[in-house]
Length: 234
Image (cartoon, rainbow, N blue to C red):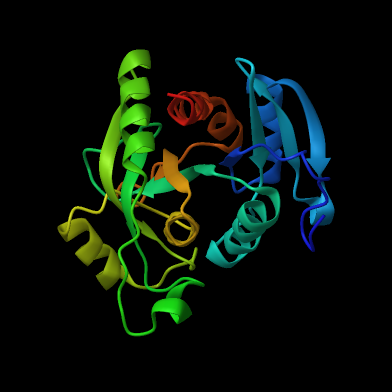
């Protein structure tokens, strides 16, 4: 047990999927895992461990934003031995050719600042995805016929952003979408020698203002989870 995770030793798998929403963790575990059992509910952050095609998998919520994710990922790696960590989350599209319900594989994640910023001080470290996971997830997307995009994304710790000038520059430089956790996940994976990837479903569009209703968000995320699981064990 840790301050924030109540799982016992051996109850967390080396492969962990990381949705922000704890209820999405429950939904994904019920839909994709065999014999899934609840292993954490401290502070309402649900985590389940079960098996996917006979292989142990944990699905653990992280909350919203990089500070929250940093707490859970640090403890999952340090105290429970997690080795492969894949974020499965939603994102807002920043390019016209990306549509709602498309999937983005985050090759790199830019940010104004994350909890890891204090480690690097004046240096702008560029955190990137594990190439093996990235290529396997892309192959899985091709296999199931999903609309998928690969490239750089922006991780923001501000949901209600008031920087239209920043959004314009991100669009100009080809940034695919904005979300709130991947950059810190990539920092931590690099620091601890783990594999990490962010697989993101576009739930809303920054340019067109189209958005999925809450119920449709859950139903549209199945492809993303399937890609993440295929990539983890490719």
